[in-house]
Amino acid sequence: MAQEALVIGASGMLTEVARWLAKEGYRVTVVGRERQKLARVRDGSGNPAKSSTGDCRTG
Image 1: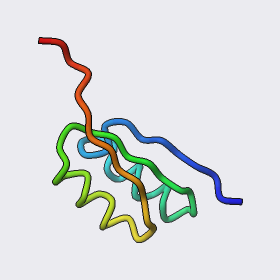
Image 2 (image 1 turned 60 degrees about the vertical axis):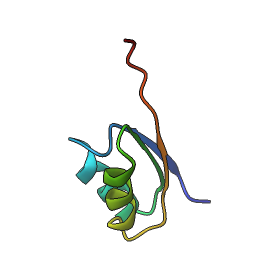
Image 3 (image 1 turned 90 degrees about the horizontal axis):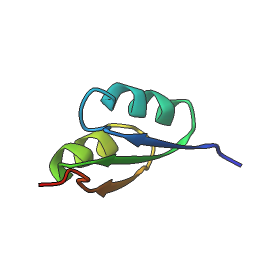
Image 4 (image 1 turned 45 degrees about the vertical axis):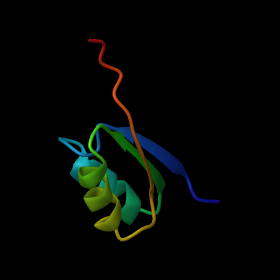
């Protein structure tokens, strides 16, 4: 069974971490604010990943 990893902020500084985890065989879920950036991270990982957008900032 594959290990799973959740990377919050993967569309920014943690992009390469998310990609590395995917290359190591983890099932990666990436979370960030910008859907287009997350899609690039997901598509460039070489391993199918889940992605979810959200923003917990309060106005």
